[in-house]
Image: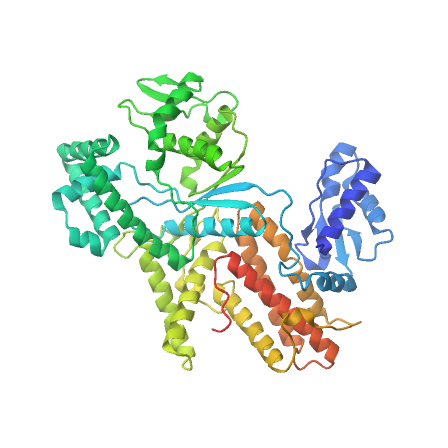
Length: 580
C-alpha cells in the first residue's frame, strides 16, 4: 500500500527515466529535517548535477517544474542550495490514511524478494554467567530477527555458543580438584565460573597448573570419555540457566549450535585452504595472507592453526560460515558482536571472498555500556555486573514505582506490570541509542515517564487503550475493531494532519531500521509518534468532539496510533501494556 513518500519516489523515478533518460539512479526521499521546509525532501539534483554538468539548483528547478505539473497530492519547492522539498496536501494524507487504516500490517507489505538471513547473536561462553556486556548483542540481534521476519524474510537465529574453548580445560581441572555436585546442581553457572576463576588464578602462579589445564582440554578434544561426560553435564546445566535469562528477555533462537559442532570440520577446513593456496605455513603455523585486493589487511595475517596443531576461534568461524552456506543456504549472515572484533570480521569476510563466497556478510558492531563515571559499567567492587542481577534490579525498581502509584491493583498484577516495564525499560534504554556509540547507563533516566523512554511510550499506549475502551463501551467499534468506523470531513485540525503524517511514516522508519541494522531509528520514530499523539490529544477532543463525524475520525486516528505503537514495541521485544 502506498504512502506519500512512495508517491514522491515513484514520480521521481518516472521523471528520471522519461525526461532525463536515467534509469540507474535510485532517488532517496526522506522526511525533512526541518518541518518548516516541507514534509519530505530529496537530494537527487546534487547526485545528478556532476554527471549532467548542470548547476544543482537549476537542475532542481527543472525537476520541480516537471514533477509539479498536474500533481494533486503534493507540490515541490526548491531550497536555496538545490534540495527539492515536498509539501503533501492534507486531503492526500487523509486518502492515504483511509486506504491503509484497516490493514492489519499497517500498510507495510512483505518483501517480494525474501532472503534466507542467518543472525548470529548473544553467543556467550558456556560455564560462565551472562554479564551486562551480553545485553547489547542479545537484544539487538533479537530485534533484527523480529524486523526481518516481519518484512517477510526467512530468518535463522543462531546462538553460537562458546562450548569448546580453552576455558573448559580450566573448568574440568577445577571440577576434578574441587568438585561439588550439590553446588553444581544449585547454581551451575555461578559455581562453574567460580571454578574457572580459581584455576585461572592458580595457573598464573603455577606453570604446572597451566599445563594440567591444557592436558584436560586436549583430553576432551581427543574424545576422552570421562571429560566428555563432564563436559556434557556442564553444557546442559549451563543451557538450562541461560534459557532462564532468555525467557525473561523474551528472546528466541532457532538454533544454539556450539563450537563443538564444528570441531570435526576444522582439519578439513585447514586442508582445503592449504590446497587452494589461500593459506600457507609460516614459522610452523598455518596462516592466511591477504593480497593486494585487501590493502587494509596486508600486514594482518589470519592464523588458523597454531604451531602446536591447535585450532583457533577464526578456524571455527570459517567452518561455521561454510556450514551455514551448505546446510541453510544462507544468502545473508549478520554477526552481532562488539566493535572490538572488527579486525576479526574484516579478515573472515576477506577470506570468504578468496573462497568465492559472495553472499552478504555484515558485522553489526556496537559500543559499550558505561557507568556514570564514563567507564565500562561494573559493580562497586569493580567486577562485571551479572545480567541476571541487572534484570532483577530493573524489575524491582519498576515494582517500587508501580506499588506506590497503583494501590488499586492486585499483587500479582503489579508484579506482571513491573516485569514488563522493568525489562522493557532496560531494553529500550539500550536500543534507543545509536548502536555504534557507547552510552551512559542511568536507572533514573530509563524508568522515567518523561523523554525517550519505554515508560513514556507505554504510557501513551495505555492512554489510547483507555480511550478506545471507553469508546467501545459507548457503542463504537465492532468485531472488526475501530477500522469499521465511517466518517466524512472537509476540515482537518493541524494536529490531526501532524498525527496522520506521523503514523504514515512508520513504514519508512521500519525499513531504515532494518536496512541499517539500527533499531534506534524505530525508537526515535515511536518517541516522536507518542509526542505527536499527546499534542493531538491535548488539542483535539476525541470522545468530546463537536461533531459525530469528527469523533469517528479521531477514534480512527487513536486506533491506528495504538496499533502502530503496539507493533513497534513488539518489534523491539517490549510488551505493549494496556494498563500501567
